[in-house]
Length: 202
Length: 129
Image (tube, rainbow over all chains, first blue to last red):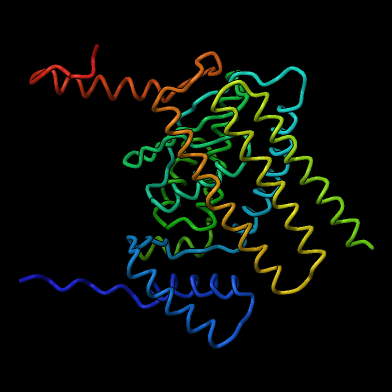
C-alpha cells in the first residue's frame, strides 16, 4: 500500500501564497477586497500549476545579525560599486581576474543560494559554477592578480557566509561554523542561550 | 528643499554609475570582466534612482512599485549574470591572459581524470580528438 504523503505544516503552504498576494496588491497599488481575492486565487493557481519543491527553512532568525548583515551589505555594495566604476574609467584599464573555489561550511541549499546571490550582487564578483554536493562555489573575481587579492576575495566569501549563518543558519550550520572557528582559534559565534537551547534539543 | 537636494544627489550618482557601467562594458577586454561591468554598478545606480523617485513622490502607490522593482532587480540580476558566466566558461569563451588563477580548471581536470579512469576500462571517450 502506498503510504500517505506527510502533510506540510500550514504556514509552509500559506507563506508563498501570502507573499504572492502581497506582490499582486503592490502591483495594483490598491488594497481592495477585489484585489485581495484575485491575488489569493492567482497565488493558489501559480503555486499549484508551477509547482516548485518546498524550500527548507532553518526555523531560526536572529534580527540583530540580520541588521548587521544588511548594514555590511549596503556598505560593501557602495564601496565595491565605486571600485568597479573606477576600474572602468581609470586610464590603466583592468588587470587580470581570477576564478577561485571556495568550500562553504553549510550544506543547506537555501544558504548556498543566498551566499551566491549576495556574491552576485556585490560588484566585482560573480559565481560561475556551484558544486552542490560538496558545497563548493566557484567565483570569478574582477581585478584579482595577486595572491593577496585572491586571499582577500576568499575571506570575503567566508565573511558573507559567516554573517548569513549568524542571521538565519540552522543550529547545525552554527555548530559546523563553530568547529571551524575553533580550529582557527576564533571564539565561537552565538554563545548565547538561543544556541544552547537548540544544542540541547538536538 | 532638503528632499530635493537628496534626490538630485541620488539621481546624479545613479546616472554616473550607469555611465561607468557602459564605459566598462566598452573598455573591459573579455567576457567575464564585461559581465561585472554590465550588471553591478548599474544595480546600485538603479537603486539610487528609485530612492530619488521615492523621495519625490512619497505615496504608497509609487513606493510599493519602486520596492518591487528593486526586489526583482536584486533577485534576478545575479542569476542572469551567473547563467551567462557559466555558459561562457563552459563554451570556453575565455581569455586565458585575463585570468590570474583558475581553480575551476583544476577541478574540471580532476573530474575528467576520474571520469576517464572509470570509462577507459569499457570504451574510449568519444570526445577526445
